[in-house]
Image (cartoon, rainbow, N blue to C red):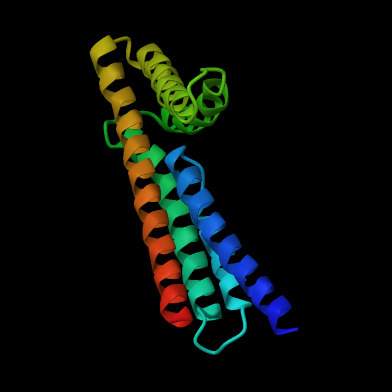
Length: 178
């Protein structure tokens, strides 16, 4: 019975590690990996032992994930509006990012294809909206670059947050196991 319990425990720890790796990978391709790390924390909280990461950590990770999602939503808007872009251009930046990520999967370079698609389509659509509105190329390009910069900064935020959450969870788990 002890061997079965240990095997179940080892499988749960392996699952936590795999979820952390998956979360970091997802963040690198502009997906929401923080939620996957929160799921890994749920698995850790269900492990037996009072020193295991608990439900407080799960709630903290859910809060962090929610805040990061809010920042991501606001960043697209902020990147365009900060450079005096229209609300329509801000919306198009969000839609363009999603469409571009999907279209980028057609580029035969894993990870890089969706990122390039997201940035390129977002830029092109914002540029088109703002060029139509302003009738000026340089201002439209300036605003479209704002959309791209905000996207890149959000990716960096997501990767950093996901790596930090993973490290926090895995270190807590390692300390508990020793």
